[in-house]
Length: 268
Image 1 (cartoon, rainbow, N blue to C red):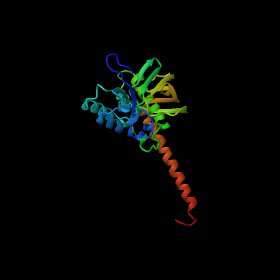
Image 2: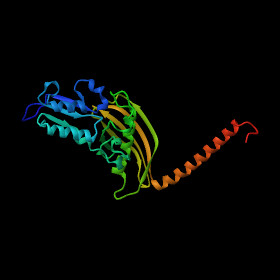
Image 3: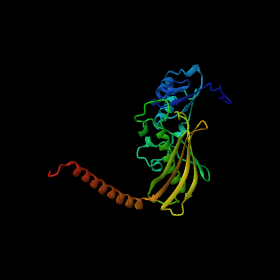
Image 4: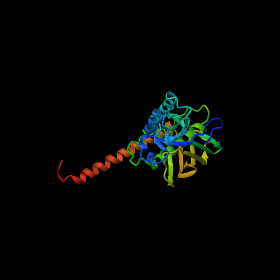
């Protein structure tokens, strides 16, 4: 990578969350803590005079801001180009349907064509699915599935809900099939989203069948085929209550029958 009016960036390093310490054993990879240490000493990797540092997975918005501020505070902005921190503007909690911002795994979706969308994968190492993951080298498959789920929520809310429509919606997955094709590592990645089939005439019942691909270095690491329906929340709430009551009655009947079988005759 070469600048036009200044010396070249002779090294490229990837920065990942501290939870990916095993992946950081590879050359040209540093954890957030390791990179912060480099910035404090001013001794860049490989003895380079100037580097590009690309943010990978496991980075929180706080981490990105911390590194950016540290670069400025140490007067390193002419020697270190931080790439990817702009991507850490995650989709809003309302779009991803998550209460805690660290559990949002995607950026805001971008429309590429009429039926094609994309978003950046942005895994925070403090998210719920990383709390008990042990390898530290690759991202577990459940992260791809949850990111795809958040993607269909966000795309629907951003692009298919009629303008001015404030109806609260409840999303129901009808079908989900996942094919894992390759390891997903804590490097930059994106989700490609294609609408295969849709029915949106009734705003109270939006139906979609979509294909979602998780892509890293133009390699598809996972593909998900999903069909789902977005219902008016009031309608689905009534159905949910009715089915919950039926399930409870059935469970109580089964428990009572099992208890009667276990108790000896004549015991009250």
